[in-house]
Image (cartoon, rainbow, N blue to C red):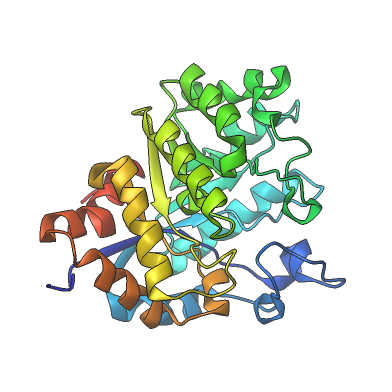
Length: 303
């Protein structure tokens, strides 16, 4: 069993200045990922590089930290700041921006976002569960409303991909969106967000993975795997990673971490070490594909 020792692309991380992100400032409110006091500080690129460079992380993708809050213009401010960080430090290499597809001005916003180097995709968080703590979207089928669909068509026009974040219970709506936009590339975040490990939930989650994996325009990101368990064990990670690969195949599975949220529970060294041990069960070419090549191809980051 040979541990991977090649280059890595982390396709899901965040950077922030606390003052810019509403949810990191008082009053702190309950979140589905638990106690997040340890996140309520700046997480600058210097700390990020200190965390990742020793582990041969050669390129990264920044996914929006949701600066916008209630002000759509703040999403552009986040990208502008990231561009300045990128120019000075070389990180991040790709940027998935925040957008609201129910906003009538979203086309102009995306046109402005696309002018920045590295902007490649969009996240509009769609997750909704019957428990209020796990509701970001106002309704479970928001992605199938007329205004959302009309604006979502902009992704094909602008050649941007979509970071799909839904729960297993929303699979039917997500599948309809994926099916109706076959020329839009999707990546399912956090391995489909397994919210608990009851037999019922695991079965529902596996079914959701299978339904989404049936569409070739969907990839999956094995990131954020400690979000709902508020910590992790190696057997827990192994089950999620292997089940995800079984559904999507090595060729459509992409590595990411969700740092610094995962830093609540582990160092980057501990987390990457666990991933490497689990993926060592696969051939060396498969390990390289998941850790590096698939991310480079999906996010168009080059070799």
